[in-house]
Image (cartoon, rainbow, N blue to C red; front, side, top):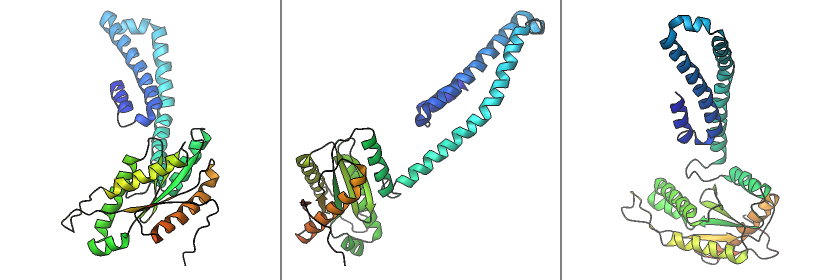
Length: 261
């Protein structure tokens, strides 16, 4: 049983490592007491146990402790597991498994709270002519494109950067601990990586290539500035769309978001 708990701590319950080790220690203690009891039985039979009242007292106290601690601990463990799963579901986009808007905000807040991020830039990435893809190849092909774009963004972004799907065909990448040239370099890398990839779609019968337009915000150093950064990057994105798409556009110092009417 203890080996099963240890196996769980290293595989399916890696995020509950401390709790699983605690359970393994409790179960190991029970195994040790049972082994000692078995050795006493082999050595002196039942009479040996009756005479060793100290051992019996220790065994009874430990068993009572397990009966008191284990049931609520297991219930707590199950509830924590369910809570973690619900939190994960609430913070992730169900199709791409990227962070959603809520998950992006929470992850950014955590990064700044831990002082890992001193300066950040927001990149808003939008798939060009996505409605045309849906109309031509069908919504299943559109979903395939979104999932493939999400994979490319994750694979191209740096470790520690935050990748999110904002909704529809719009994604966001937050480059942490970088300056403006670094953010521009990353935006161009993302754009080029998507442009050079082919996406297999069953309906079309041939690989599909798509492009993206990227809007880059000014730098910010506080999670509360995310909304302003989104407006800046969104305004830059629409400038890029108007200029012909498949390009990187930056936010000007006093740029205001455009009217969507």
